[in-house]
Amino acid sequence: MAYWLIKSEPFKYSWEQLVKDKKTFWDGVRNYAARNNLRSMKKGDELFFYHSNEGLEIVGIAMVVKEWYQDPTTEDAAWSVVDVAPVRKLKRPVLLAQIKADPRLAHMEILRLNRLSVSKVTPEEWNVVLELAGEKR
Image 1: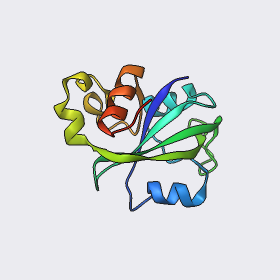
Image 2: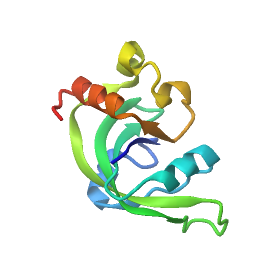
Image 3: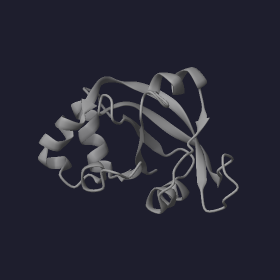
Image 4: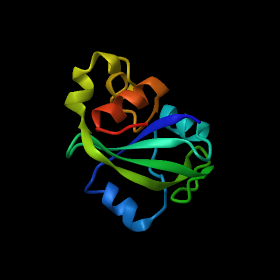
């Protein structure tokens, strides 16, 4: 299993909306590095759901329920989507400021490649974020 982080502006698509929808395809990715990350995802991989612009926090855990396919919102074959479903809301959100302040997360892609909407998370980073959220693995 691999771990990832997906970003969404809450006014466009929030964690609460994903919970309400129960499943969605993750579209709108128009960056090749982020697209390649989508294409690397496997069914069962877990994702941190991050609210960008407003909140600046990881709020929940989602899961890949269908591997990549052509983005249905465009005819351009260069773009892909995956289907994701909510797993659970974190006990407490993990703020971007907390991530920046924790030396164990200094190399996390959300900090190094902050404009990337879909990024990799190492197992070690995953566990540190869960710890910051008050969760046990």
